[in-house]
Image (tube, protein in one colour):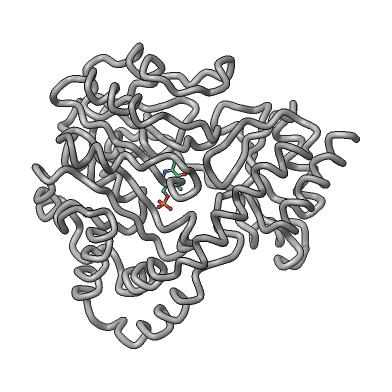
Length: 358
Ligand SMILES: *Cc1c(COP(=O)(O)O)cnc(C)c1O
């Protein structure tokens, strides 16, 4: 019998619950639900991106070529890097795969944060890598210092940093990221995941991509740009090895529609500004009004300690507010609430407080 290779150490990605899924289960209209579970953009996509995708529908029969080139050039100009340094991918997750594909030899180890983003270990294992963990301690307020990482470092091939960190919202200072890069071995790549980079005031680690050859930065259009459904992301990599992309990327993996959406979204400053401003307001609002401890967050979400995370998740869901139960992150006493519109956020906090009271 033919069977897949041994996948027993592989885990299954557990996404936040979809709105249609919950609506069906509760027999409710999806429009009556507030979904704050997956850090999506509460304002939807940029209207300019919607228009661009509608227009691009006419070209669906041809492979994406010019649009890929144009989007890469636009991103390169924005970050002040060469075109080869932009590794465009059909999602941030796949950009992580491209880095793993380019770096990991069978048996190489990577170092991932726990709690942390589930896809780092998954991606490493797909590429025949092995996984070690460093802990981000709740006792320490989930602070990320160089020691947090370096105390567990043992020559791994890739070290993943997340700032702002999902699901805690904590951040790592640029100088601390540089210390990690400096103190890790010559063959170690430091991947700085900035999926939530638009929501923080902290500078991007892209300046380390410029000054060093061992740091790559990950970015996505899924969060601030509201394009989670088209799947679009990229890595920014050092010039020294940027040309490896041509040897590892899956041809035409970023669709014509995604490229066109990305190009348009990058020109829609109003949409991003509204998104970021509202997220900052919402973080403050939840921290101030929730009757539960809330950690400081640099992202478009906050982590809240509620005691019985799953119970609170269920009770809020029954009231039409879907948040993220954090047991898959090993934080069963917490929920993560995505920043909604002002109205959604107020409803979510009111619902949370009611649930906590009963
Ligand atoms: C959302 C997210 C990503 C990437 O998401 P894609 O939708 O695959 O682009 C990467 N890292 C973290 C920490 C995220 O939360």
